[in-house]
Length: 183
Image (tube, rainbow, N blue to C red; front, side, top):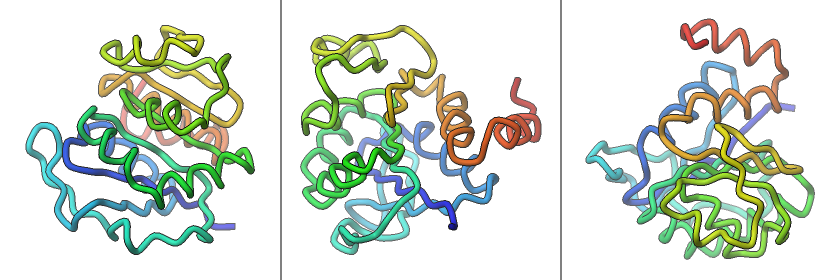
């Protein structure tokens, strides 16, 4: 089966948290489908990303190896309102398929009942108080069942490599890390 990742973005997405995973997944031979609310998405620091498709083109029946949610609070608020994305996340979670959420993106999961109250997570410190129902762990990457969370832009490489490890194996993730001189 070909590995594929859905990565949604919206105006205000934290660009590092989108671009680092996109790049590392593609280096790993994982197909990445970037979906946005328009064909040009301006990120939180002015970088523009051109999604492959818009949300109205997503199909609920499409299957993904993983769904990866970048942060940026403004974008997270917009992504939380994309009904098709939430439906796909719920379907994906129902089958215990991999979901990654970095920075403020765990709010998308929390606000749509995709995390049980005892879930272990991490997030950007600025949204920690909004995630009080969960066990907040201070670490670069936190695993809870099928959910991987990470606190922010500075941990984007660790986050992406953890997802690659889950999809392709530890040795493959180490090979990718070595190829970009990441240690």
